[in-house]
Image 1: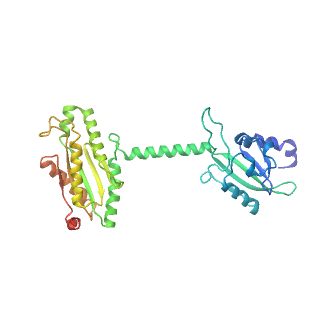
Image 2 (image 1 turned 30 degrees about the horizontal axis):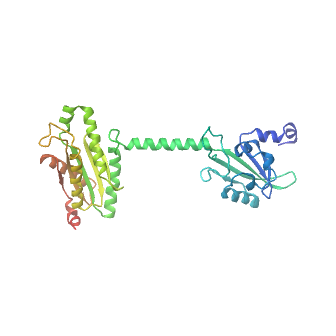
Image 3 (image 1 turned 135 degrees about the vertical axis):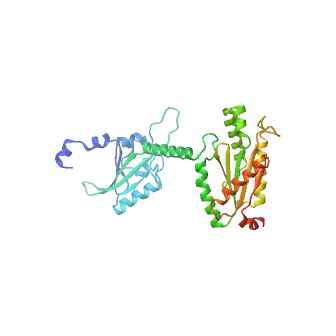
Length: 325
């Protein structure tokens, strides 16, 4: 800044008018400048901060990362930026809080720059900006992104995984089973006589029945690797890795029983007069991506043909002996 400009303006007025924090310290880290923005957000007045060591000027501790950065700038005369991503609240600075609300530290972005005084002293200029708004915006965007992601992969009626999620997960699960040579179990599940249920009880009751069945199936899963999805209409699909065939069949019976025990009345479903499911199961080490799903679907068709309210299991022939061990 030229001489004419500095005579026209008072630098102290300028430093107090701008909407960022300014601190200047000397080579010993003693405070030489403490503008109004810093005073406002630290609740420490300039008179109480001047000529004190910076780390002692605040009423609370300054972060170790900040002090290390300051010492490095004083020693090596290189600027340092403390980004909000890694250093959220280096200095004990606060925004005004609402009544009866506890104060929380302001998110900050800090730049430490070496400067020389007119007496040729080595000093540091510390610039502090409030990043709270950008951090809140980032959190909102992240939250919104998570909501959109959940909506894209979750069935709107049942709140379990949807067909889109299953298609992506199934592809990954098959590839993993192929690579590690472990068995994968696919369960195709269909609610029995569902069209007649809808016709007799109405679509609202039908939707509620689908939700109850989905909840019963979901409640049986206990491993993070197991997923259930709504495949379409009244049909569901389960993917479960690492199950020997006998264990997979026991679990199929557990699923059938869980829905049967809901005891949802269905007057047109003989002989039990309650809502039931049929299950097609295929267990094996996949070699062709479509084998498991096609076999499970074929098994479901057989379960329907043989009277419903049961499961049919069709192992992959090439892995049958392995799974029997």
